[in-house]
Image (tube, rainbow, N blue to C red):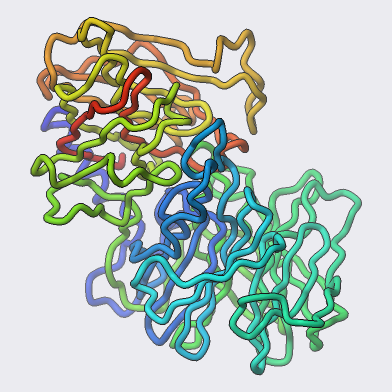
Length: 542
């Protein structure tokens, strides 16, 4: 990438930072979306002056990222709730098994008497996990497993009791043991809410329960026919009801009709209230927005009288910076990675290193794979809107015949650009797009799919080991561009770039259910034992 382009993009990033407040100011300007990246199913808590948020990452490992903030606008990943859910065929991508579109969903986060609790459903297993720790900065918490799926659940700690509310359409409640380790002996399940059936595409889910003042509040999302995703609140002075209903946030946002809904509410140390709600935003994923909250007649009304807000002032001093994605030069003293990285499913820890070659990430080939969807040790980072570039320098000198390595735009329909080694040891630079032979959310099924949908769009001989690779993502287009497109480029000297004559039309596919990420991959199709090295990963937001 040319120096002039880097400088121009750097200036643009400075002009589009989500917080416009000045250092040392008593308030912080918020411009939504907060990070313009895939951080869905938010739940959050305050402990003193510190705020912690959890999100869904499904099949990626480690999972359930914990983010920290002191101003509600800037968020940094500080830990993960777990390393891997199970060491089985599903998470090892064996025997055709995987957890795409499943895994960890919609975590409820709470803090009680010095202990942090995280509860979520594992959709590939039909089970609920409850994790506990006294140190939220430490990953891999202690866990219990409940052999029952509590969909989009929320915890309520009340006078020594622990209740969980969950469901879809009908929201139910049951009591757990005080530490969340099991359903309490003799506890009876009760339906609290039966949401409307007529004229709704989506009935109540994404529950968040609170006891505030005289009322119990249950926030949930629904989708009225002909409308947008909507945040609805139910309240009652008795935990077991009856509950009355009111819409508290509904409306198009930021030029899209997707609506903003699902998330939690919080009171700051200053007595102000805010909500964290996400928006389905196409291929980049489900992106978080911060919304002001006002109490009106005992109801938590979000945004500007229920309409989502683009920009407003947060009554907290500016602090920190966003760090849910980052550049990486792979200069590590220990064999560990920055917290912004997640593996596609469980990694084989014997098959990667950041210490074997100083300043390089080494991805070794292990079990045989056919494409990136069943390859172990694909390392991923979130992409970011409105547009971004992901660039790497790769060394293919350690690759063996049948090996494939490079970078990819990772989702159900994907593109890859990298090196393939032939039987005779010769190398080729190859680019591929893949539209899988199935119907995807928001896009028609591809006509005449070939095999698994892969289409080779570039193959040229590569007479050197080092190659520079780049994928450019356009999520929110300028005039004359289309939304949700990815473009591949390569360079043989790091200065002069060649764009591949092919475009990937990205789509937020429900079979994967995650926003697009850039993945670094290296896998064998013939024999294990080869490797590819990556000198750096640079992502530039436009």
